[in-house]
Image (cartoon, rainbow, N blue to C red):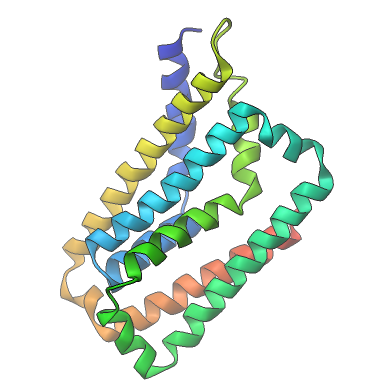
Length: 209
C-alpha cells in the first residue's frame, strides 16, 4: 500500500463517517439558520479542529491509552455526555422564551467564538472519534512510513471532507431562503437541535466501550 492509495482508501471511510447525520450536522445547520454562513463555517472549523486534534493524538499514541484504560474512557464519555445534555437542554429552554429567540438573531459579538468552541469541545469530548482513529490509522499507514506524519495526513483528509460537507449544508440552508430565517424556523431548529444533542448525550452515557 502506497501513501496515495492509503489516503484514498481512508478518504472513502472518512466520507461515510462525515455524511452520517449527527451532532456536527445539527450544529452546522443551526448556526447557518440562526446566525448566517460565516458563523456556520466557524462552527465547522471548530468541529474540524477537534477532529484534527484527535487525529494527532491517535497518531501519537494518546488514544491507545484511552482504549486501554476503561476508567479514562468512561470519564471522557460521561464528561462528553453531560456537556451535550447541558448544551441541548439550554437550546430547548431558550427556544421557549420569546426574548431569547429574538436575541439569537441579533447576537453577533461573541457568537463566532462560541460556535468555534462548541464545535471543538463537542468533538474533543467524544472518545469514539479517538477510537475511530486508533482503529483506522494502523490500517492506513504503509510500512516504513512515519506513523505521526501519516496520522496528521489522514486527519487532514478528514478535516477537508468535513469542511466540504459543511459547505454543502450551508449552501443548502441559503437556498432555502427566507423560510429558514423566520423566527418560527429558528425556534424549531433550536428545539430539534437541542433534542438531538440531549438524545445523543444520553446515548453516549449509556453506551459501552
